[in-house]
Length: 247
Image (cartoon, rainbow, N blue to C red):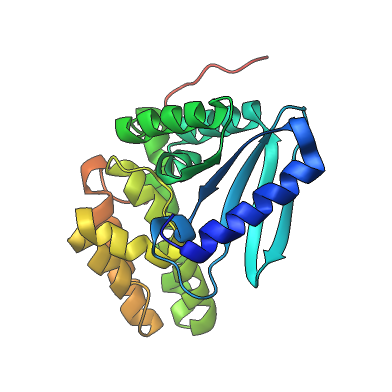
């Protein structure tokens, strides 16, 4: 663990959980900025506690002045979360478990979960399905139209719409370009700059300035991000392919 204080706090939490849970505690796993080394004074410590019983709980403790967020649940909860985030392409749990560290693992359960997450993380997300592309194209087109109409009558509301658009487009941009969809907000643009500096610059420009400046940058961003799937949806008639559904 990059943070020595975090190691000490994790040891205290482990002792308390062992006293409280006894044999029900299967393992303990640490993740987040305290593990990765990009923490600041106010960063918390994120811990996953694996239990043997079919129950789950989220709690926050303050240990030696450090806030500790603890997610407790059985192995199956982590497995289901990994599968949910793999199918959606968000990769939240993949990133957490692939990059975290084992704190306590007498039976190898935590190591098995970490190894499974690391394999999924390395393999990358599933591609965006062709029948889902319309969603990525439609939302920016609608929000840009809303912002354009609003700028003449309510600049604050136009700015709010543009904020929503930029946030939603960030995950869409990552997914359409073969990246896991989720990224920590406080590091999102720096992370994107490593694999798409042009996109990162457009996101920055769409996040600051007047509503008119941000609108222009957001429109450029939408064209850039969606260039390989036909661009933002154009006005006029369109339709999706038929999909089978249950009666």
